[in-house]
Length: 241
Figure 1 (cartoon, rainbow, N blue to C red):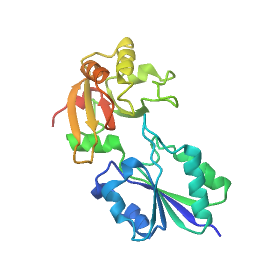
Figure 2: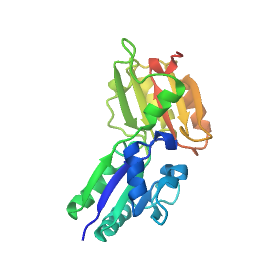
Figure 3: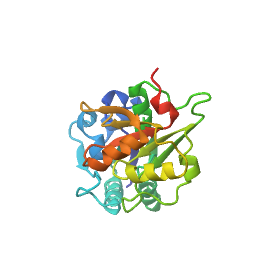
Figure 4: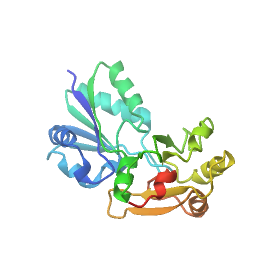
């Protein structure tokens, strides 16, 4: 007897940004496996009596191993349960979705993916800017600031990332941004290129800070990494509409 898994994208944290489809799946679920960043008020939409299981992964903190999360999905679905895997942002963007999907496929368990609002979209909207603009940002690119070991990836296309005419969104990059900024400047990007730090978007303690890549690098080099953030940089990040 096999159940079914719905990968539901919770958005950045504001329950009003959860899609209607995602909300419906939450209300119908027997089991919800949720990330730390997809908890809080969004979990209030789960039906009474549903089993809620925290499987969050946070840098520098004790976290559920990915293999364990995948095993839980398979085991719960194998009982015939309707399972929701609740991921923050959009589950297809730096959410290790493919590993969990592979585990379900290997076990013959059906699944669906419910898209949602990713952090970069929410950060841009909250700060009042678009992600693209004619003549200013004809390309938008999403990158991760951390490889599997938590370090800055070395195999980036640095010419593309140093293009100030693109808007670049850096996920999981607060700790490595000083090193990233140094590489960008080394590859020709101006230290005065606008940057936007968007922290805890969709939560009561959200923080938006407009600055430059050099000033942000200097600042983050001195700060302890606590709240999650996405960093936008490029000419468009400095626009005030």
